[in-house]
Length: 281
Image 1 (cartoon, rainbow, N blue to C red):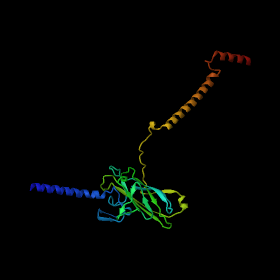
Image 2 (cartoon, one colour):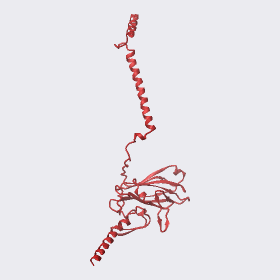
Image 3 (cartoon, one colour):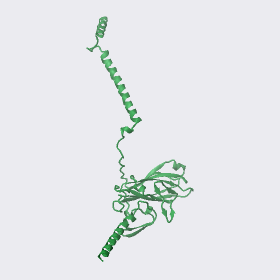
Image 4 (cartoon, helix red, strand yellow):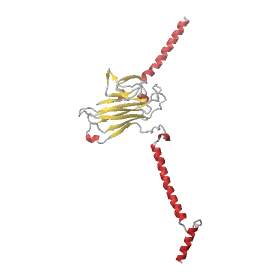
């Protein structure tokens, strides 16, 4: 009887532990997240129609402008059928103390998204090429940056392409908390022509603009790895030193070799100097 009671207690404690662990596992989406989603908020269950449009509400219920969502190489307008290489980066938020550093969920209304660093999620049994999210590998990127390709719609007259991007910077403990910060970047891209393509690209961002540049990986270059550049540097210094030596020698020669007031000059020069003075008289 006593043994059965102890076994029941152990089973109950194990069940409670699994129930406590389950929300953590369900709320940590380092393998990507997109589309509809439900989570338990402070006021009860919250149903999200699209994470890219609504934000990462499972980590925090409000967006935080201390996180900069930056999108590079954005055209001023798109040309039908063209492909654009874009770069998404998150700056700000908590320092990552664990393996995973951040992620994102993105949706476009026109065209298609693709990436070698991210994935098109499967929604309702089909791959959604207008949505993109991080992978488990890319959620561990140290710089919280992802590169992807957007292919504009092929047909002219498609209209405005809307982008919805939610970026989440986390501390890596895989537990939603107040330290995790997210923000959104939403914008529309008009259809253009060759004239707008000639304008180049731009950088769009959402946040308070308080961006600190990342620390460099190293602060110098090992001399053993400079190779030919180092040899050219030393040869240049040797050449410059040789020029200085020639100038100094010429100065000494002019000062002491032909000066009439130098006491250490040779007897031949003295005699010649005297003869020249007598001839002048």
